[in-house]
Length: 229
Image 1 (cartoon, rainbow, N blue to C red):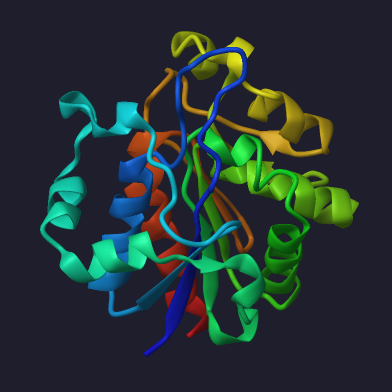
Image 2: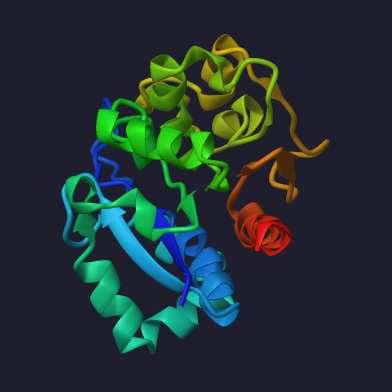
């Protein structure tokens, strides 16, 4: 069975506040079940290994998705989530694609993690799809710092500055993702309205704008895999 690697944040704390962050649960569960239902095996990894922190806001009733409820009844998926591999344990040769869910956490750890950056470059430079959604594209920052041409002129999306303003967390994060991706040479695209679903493809790089884009981003990555199968 072909395998997809999903890399999750290990970071829980926001700056200048007692509020917590971590993985936005639906941005993990929506893609996870898209991959599982398409017949792929999914391996989970994170910088620290073990159970990643979950953004408490993503577990509020208004943010619960059908895949969240499915996850709550899925003992195998919960065991995987509670026991993610450390990034250093990952052999990228075992996987056909890599995918980064969001939550604000990646702005701190995955954006600065060299092992994660090398993993992205291993996939990208060998022609295997790289997917990320919402704040997950923050992981591209380290990869682009290691290989500057990675994002030069590439069409990408992610959580926008306008969306950041609407969640009132702009003063509690190390940088704004849209601004940083542009600084690295990316051609940033987004939906006309904040929080509308938007997926951006550029070759084997697939990015999604926000939580509603998580499932569609995973589907776009699966289509890429079908083309290269």
